[in-house]
Length: 253
Figure (tube, rainbow, N blue to C red):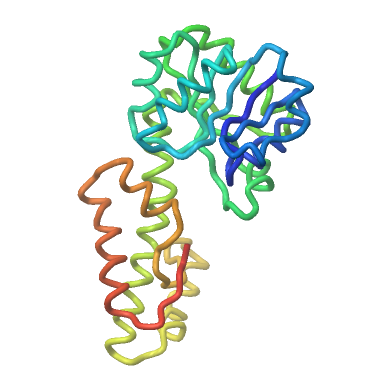
Protein backbone atom coordinates (compact mmCIF):
# COMPACT_ATOMS: atom_id res chain seq x y z
CA UNK A 1 0.00 0.00 0.00
CA UNK A 2 1.21 3.50 -0.82
CA UNK A 3 0.10 7.13 -0.66
CA UNK A 4 0.55 9.60 -3.52
CA UNK A 5 1.18 13.35 -3.20
CA UNK A 6 -0.05 15.19 -6.30
CA UNK A 7 1.66 18.54 -6.81
CA UNK A 8 5.18 19.01 -5.42
CA UNK A 9 5.16 22.76 -4.87
CA UNK A 10 5.16 24.81 -1.69
CA UNK A 11 2.58 22.55 -0.03
CA UNK A 12 3.14 19.23 -1.76
CA UNK A 13 6.90 18.99 -1.33
CA UNK A 14 6.83 19.36 2.47
CA UNK A 15 3.74 17.13 2.63
CA UNK A 16 5.69 14.44 0.77
CA UNK A 17 8.59 14.78 3.22
CA UNK A 18 6.17 14.59 6.14
CA UNK A 19 4.32 11.41 5.25
CA UNK A 20 7.02 9.52 3.35
CA UNK A 21 8.64 8.57 6.66
CA UNK A 22 5.43 6.82 7.74
CA UNK A 23 4.29 5.10 4.55
CA UNK A 24 5.65 4.30 1.10
CA UNK A 25 4.92 7.48 -0.83
CA UNK A 26 4.98 8.52 -4.47
CA UNK A 27 5.42 12.18 -5.36
CA UNK A 28 3.80 13.22 -8.63
CA UNK A 29 4.08 16.55 -10.42
CA UNK A 30 3.41 17.62 -14.02
CA UNK A 31 6.99 18.92 -13.93
CA UNK A 32 8.62 15.49 -14.06
CA UNK A 33 11.94 16.92 -12.87
CA UNK A 34 10.36 17.26 -9.41
CA UNK A 35 9.31 13.62 -9.18
CA UNK A 36 11.43 11.58 -6.72
CA UNK A 37 13.54 8.72 -8.09
CA UNK A 38 12.03 6.48 -5.42
CA UNK A 39 8.70 6.55 -7.28
CA UNK A 40 9.68 3.58 -9.44
CA UNK A 41 9.95 1.30 -6.40
CA UNK A 42 6.36 1.87 -5.33
CA UNK A 43 4.46 2.56 -8.53
CA UNK A 44 2.90 -0.94 -8.69
CA UNK A 45 1.61 -0.85 -5.11
CA UNK A 46 -2.12 -0.17 -4.55
CA UNK A 47 -2.92 3.41 -3.51
CA UNK A 48 -4.64 4.31 -0.26
CA UNK A 49 -4.77 8.15 -0.37
CA UNK A 50 -3.94 10.66 -3.03
CA UNK A 51 -3.04 13.94 -1.35
CA UNK A 52 -4.06 16.85 -3.58
CA UNK A 53 -1.69 19.81 -3.25
CA UNK A 54 -2.30 21.61 -6.55
CA UNK A 55 -3.66 25.16 -6.93
CA UNK A 56 -7.41 25.58 -7.07
CA UNK A 57 -8.30 26.91 -10.52
CA UNK A 58 -10.51 26.11 -13.52
CA UNK A 59 -8.50 22.95 -14.20
CA UNK A 60 -8.74 21.63 -10.64
CA UNK A 61 -11.56 19.16 -11.26
CA UNK A 62 -10.04 17.92 -14.52
CA UNK A 63 -6.65 17.42 -12.86
CA UNK A 64 -8.29 15.64 -9.94
CA UNK A 65 -10.08 13.24 -12.28
CA UNK A 66 -6.86 12.51 -14.15
CA UNK A 67 -4.96 11.84 -10.92
CA UNK A 68 -7.73 9.58 -9.63
CA UNK A 69 -7.76 7.64 -12.89
CA UNK A 70 -3.97 7.32 -12.88
CA UNK A 71 -3.58 6.08 -9.29
CA UNK A 72 -6.98 4.50 -8.46
CA UNK A 73 -6.92 5.53 -4.78
CA UNK A 74 -9.27 4.35 -2.07
CA UNK A 75 -9.69 7.93 -0.87
CA UNK A 76 -8.79 11.55 -1.72
CA UNK A 77 -7.38 14.16 0.67
CA UNK A 78 -7.45 17.78 -0.50
CA UNK A 79 -4.86 20.01 1.20
CA UNK A 80 -5.30 22.94 -1.21
CA UNK A 81 -7.32 26.03 -0.34
CA UNK A 82 -10.60 25.69 -2.23
CA UNK A 83 -13.87 27.54 -2.78
CA UNK A 84 -16.56 26.94 -0.13
CA UNK A 85 -18.80 24.07 -1.18
CA UNK A 86 -16.17 22.35 -3.33
CA UNK A 87 -15.79 19.21 -1.20
CA UNK A 88 -19.53 18.58 -1.20
CA UNK A 89 -19.71 19.16 -4.96
CA UNK A 90 -16.79 16.80 -5.61
CA UNK A 91 -18.12 14.11 -3.29
CA UNK A 92 -21.27 13.91 -5.38
CA UNK A 93 -19.12 13.11 -8.42
CA UNK A 94 -16.83 10.46 -6.88
CA UNK A 95 -17.67 7.09 -5.35
CA UNK A 96 -14.70 7.19 -2.96
CA UNK A 97 -14.46 9.30 0.23
CA UNK A 98 -13.06 12.82 -0.06
CA UNK A 99 -11.43 14.46 2.93
CA UNK A 100 -10.76 18.18 3.07
CA UNK A 101 -7.82 19.14 5.27
CA UNK A 102 -6.87 22.82 5.07
CA UNK A 103 -3.18 23.63 5.36
CA UNK A 104 -1.78 26.18 7.79
CA UNK A 105 1.72 27.57 7.88
CA UNK A 106 4.30 29.83 6.24
CA UNK A 107 5.60 28.52 2.92
CA UNK A 108 9.30 28.98 3.68
CA UNK A 109 9.00 26.83 6.83
CA UNK A 110 6.03 24.68 5.82
CA UNK A 111 7.43 21.32 6.94
CA UNK A 112 8.03 22.69 10.43
CA UNK A 113 4.57 24.26 10.51
CA UNK A 114 2.87 21.08 9.29
CA UNK A 115 4.30 19.36 12.35
CA UNK A 116 3.44 22.26 14.66
CA UNK A 117 -0.19 22.93 13.78
CA UNK A 118 -3.13 20.62 14.44
CA UNK A 119 -4.31 19.25 11.06
CA UNK A 120 -8.01 20.02 10.84
CA UNK A 121 -10.02 17.83 8.49
CA UNK A 122 -13.63 17.14 7.54
CA UNK A 123 -15.62 14.72 5.42
CA UNK A 124 -19.23 14.63 4.24
CA UNK A 125 -21.40 12.53 6.55
CA UNK A 126 -22.82 10.69 3.56
CA UNK A 127 -19.41 9.96 2.00
CA UNK A 128 -18.76 6.24 1.37
CA UNK A 129 -16.44 4.63 3.91
CA UNK A 130 -16.23 7.93 5.80
CA UNK A 131 -15.34 6.23 9.09
CA UNK A 132 -12.54 4.23 7.49
CA UNK A 133 -11.10 7.25 5.66
CA UNK A 134 -11.19 9.43 8.78
CA UNK A 135 -9.49 6.84 10.97
CA UNK A 136 -6.83 6.10 8.33
CA UNK A 137 -6.04 9.79 7.83
CA UNK A 138 -5.83 10.42 11.58
CA UNK A 139 -3.53 7.41 11.93
CA UNK A 140 -1.28 8.64 9.12
CA UNK A 141 -0.95 12.07 10.68
CA UNK A 142 -0.34 10.61 14.12
CA UNK A 143 2.49 8.47 12.76
CA UNK A 144 3.94 11.64 11.23
CA UNK A 145 3.78 13.35 14.63
CA UNK A 146 0.83 15.59 13.73
CA UNK A 147 -2.30 16.08 15.83
CA UNK A 148 -5.66 16.04 14.06
CA UNK A 149 -9.11 17.45 14.74
CA UNK A 150 -12.21 16.50 12.78
CA UNK A 151 -14.71 19.27 12.09
CA UNK A 152 -18.43 18.63 11.63
CA UNK A 153 -18.49 19.31 7.88
CA UNK A 154 -16.15 20.41 5.05
CA UNK A 155 -17.98 23.70 4.41
CA UNK A 156 -17.12 25.01 7.87
CA UNK A 157 -13.46 24.19 7.32
CA UNK A 158 -13.41 25.62 3.78
CA UNK A 159 -14.78 28.89 5.17
CA UNK A 160 -12.50 28.78 8.19
CA UNK A 161 -9.39 28.66 6.02
CA UNK A 162 -10.38 31.78 4.08
CA UNK A 163 -12.31 33.82 6.67
CA UNK A 164 -10.33 33.05 9.84
CA UNK A 165 -6.86 32.67 8.32
CA UNK A 166 -5.87 34.49 5.15
CA UNK A 167 -8.64 37.12 5.00
CA UNK A 168 -8.32 37.91 8.70
CA UNK A 169 -4.60 38.43 8.21
CA UNK A 170 -5.35 40.68 5.24
CA UNK A 171 -7.80 42.71 7.33
CA UNK A 172 -5.15 43.26 10.01
CA UNK A 173 -2.67 44.41 7.39
CA UNK A 174 -5.36 46.74 6.04
CA UNK A 175 -5.54 48.49 9.40
CA UNK A 176 -1.77 48.82 9.44
CA UNK A 177 -2.05 50.36 5.96
CA UNK A 178 -4.70 52.80 7.20
CA UNK A 179 -2.49 53.66 10.16
CA UNK A 180 0.45 54.43 7.91
CA UNK A 181 -1.67 56.58 5.61
CA UNK A 182 -2.82 58.56 8.66
CA UNK A 183 0.71 59.02 9.99
CA UNK A 184 1.85 60.04 6.51
CA UNK A 185 -0.93 62.61 6.29
CA UNK A 186 -0.08 64.15 9.67
CA UNK A 187 3.66 63.63 9.30
CA UNK A 188 4.17 61.71 12.55
CA UNK A 189 6.24 58.58 13.24
CA UNK A 190 4.35 55.33 12.72
CA UNK A 191 6.21 53.29 15.34
CA UNK A 192 6.04 56.02 17.95
CA UNK A 193 2.30 56.41 17.46
CA UNK A 194 1.76 52.66 17.76
CA UNK A 195 3.83 52.47 20.96
CA UNK A 196 0.74 53.83 22.69
CA UNK A 197 -0.94 50.45 22.11
CA UNK A 198 1.94 48.25 23.25
CA UNK A 199 0.80 47.78 26.84
CA UNK A 200 -2.84 47.49 25.81
CA UNK A 201 -1.93 44.59 23.56
CA UNK A 202 0.30 43.11 26.26
CA UNK A 203 -2.51 43.10 28.83
CA UNK A 204 -5.55 42.51 26.61
CA UNK A 205 -4.08 40.82 23.53
CA UNK A 206 -6.38 42.68 21.13
CA UNK A 207 -4.27 45.53 19.68
CA UNK A 208 -1.77 43.76 17.38
CA UNK A 209 0.64 45.97 15.44
CA UNK A 210 1.42 44.69 11.96
CA UNK A 211 3.87 45.78 9.30
CA UNK A 212 2.03 48.18 6.97
CA UNK A 213 3.15 46.84 3.61
CA UNK A 214 1.44 46.10 0.32
CA UNK A 215 -0.35 42.74 0.32
CA UNK A 216 1.31 40.67 -2.39
CA UNK A 217 1.98 36.94 -2.52
CA UNK A 218 -0.46 34.24 -3.60
CA UNK A 219 -2.59 33.58 -0.52
CA UNK A 220 -4.42 36.57 0.96
CA UNK A 221 -5.65 38.33 -2.20
CA UNK A 222 -6.09 35.26 -4.46
CA UNK A 223 -8.07 33.46 -1.75
CA UNK A 224 -10.60 36.30 -1.76
CA UNK A 225 -11.51 35.28 -5.29
CA UNK A 226 -12.49 31.84 -3.99
CA UNK A 227 -15.28 33.15 -1.79
CA UNK A 228 -16.71 36.08 -3.81
CA UNK A 229 -17.84 38.10 -0.79
CA UNK A 230 -18.39 41.84 -1.29
CA UNK A 231 -17.49 42.70 2.29
CA UNK A 232 -14.23 40.73 2.22
CA UNK A 233 -13.42 42.31 -1.14
CA UNK A 234 -12.88 45.56 0.79
CA UNK A 235 -9.47 44.07 1.65
CA UNK A 236 -8.51 44.30 -2.02
CA UNK A 237 -9.87 47.83 -2.35
CA UNK A 238 -7.92 49.06 0.68
CA UNK A 239 -4.78 47.36 -0.61
CA UNK A 240 -5.16 49.18 -3.93
CA UNK A 241 -5.78 52.52 -2.21
CA UNK A 242 -2.66 52.01 -0.09
CA UNK A 243 -0.67 51.23 -3.23
CA UNK A 244 -1.68 54.59 -4.72
CA UNK A 245 -1.25 56.66 -1.56
CA UNK A 246 2.06 55.44 -0.14
CA UNK A 247 5.32 55.80 -2.01
CA UNK A 248 8.33 53.51 -1.47
CA UNK A 249 6.07 50.88 0.10
CA UNK A 250 7.31 47.40 0.94
CA UNK A 251 5.45 44.11 0.59
CA UNK A 252 3.93 42.51 3.71
CA UNK A 253 3.15 39.03 2.33
